[in-house]
Length: 178
Image 1 (spheres, rainbow, N blue to C red):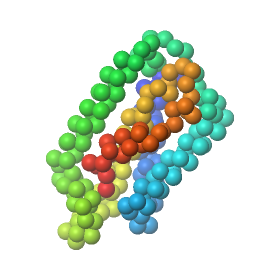
Image 2 (image 1 turned 90 degrees about the vertical axis):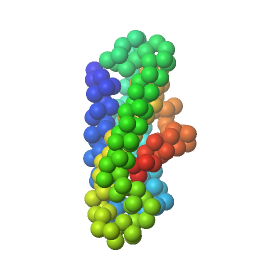
Image 3 (image 1 turned 180 degrees about the vertical axis):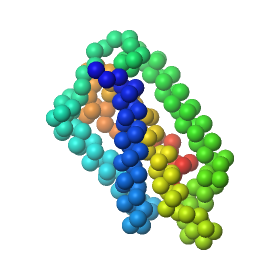
Image 4 (image 1 turned 30 degrees about the horizontal axis):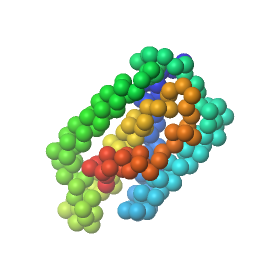
């Protein structure tokens, strides 16, 4: 019974909280660069393994939603509505990225990305702005994931992230990344 739209919002909030928790631990212990990226990828893989094996959500089978043409259930008979929904999400992310880049916060993100030590020397609170970047990026990943898992007859295993979708997520989040 719950709409996938509500699930996306709840998933975004959970991703925000989990991202802040994991980000706090990583930044507190000084992980940066490839070590930070690998720790994030490892956390994502652990969560996928938990989701695939979790009996409460029927494991890899997932929760089946009857196929139909319903905006509320996020099921459509053809792929065109998914295209427009993903396009709207992408435009929203681009607008958010542009807005952040034009603010002082965006300049701080840029300074931290280019040279963390120099940014710290200028008086930028590195920990604070890295956590802000995590707070902005974390909810975008679940919302921007492919909508195909909610269509009938598909499951988590068939829709697990492939390298292409991981790269898409990483490039989408790059302007905001610490």
